[in-house]
Image (tube, rainbow, N blue to C red; front, side):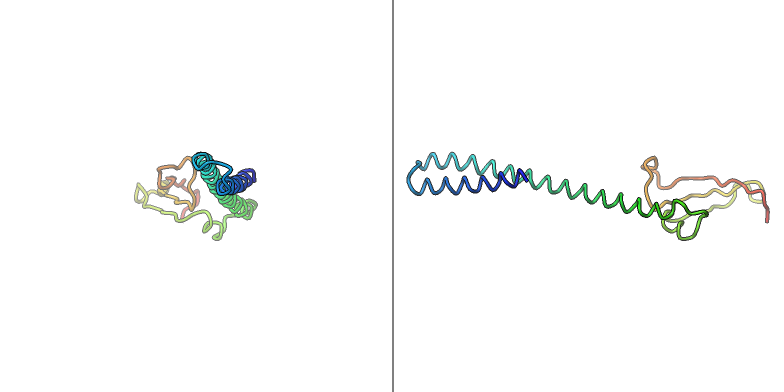
Length: 139
C-alpha cells in the first residue's frame, strides 16, 4: 500500500512540475533535472512493487500446495488398513523382482517403490530400494 501511494504521489508531483514548467515558474533545465529524478524513483518503486507482487504470488501458491497436501494427508492418516485408493494417491508404482535364490522359501524378493512425491532425503535417487522380508507363511 505504501509503494502504491508513493507511486501515485510521484505521478502528482510530476504533473505539478510539468504545470510549473509550462507556466514559466521553473526553467527547462530545472524541470529536466527534477523530472528525471522523480521518474527514476517512480520506476524503482514500480519495480519493487512488481517484485513484491510476484513474491506474494509464489508464497500463495506454495501455501495452496501445502494446504492441499495436508488436506489429502488428513483423509488417509486414520485409515485402519492399506487400501487400493491410498496406494494410488501416494505410490506411483511398485516393482517386484525375482528372488536372488531361485528356489529358496526364505529369501525375499527385491522390491522398488516409486512414490508419487519426492521425499527430502530422496534427492537424486529415483526410488527407495526396499528388500522384502520373507513371510512366515508359505504357499
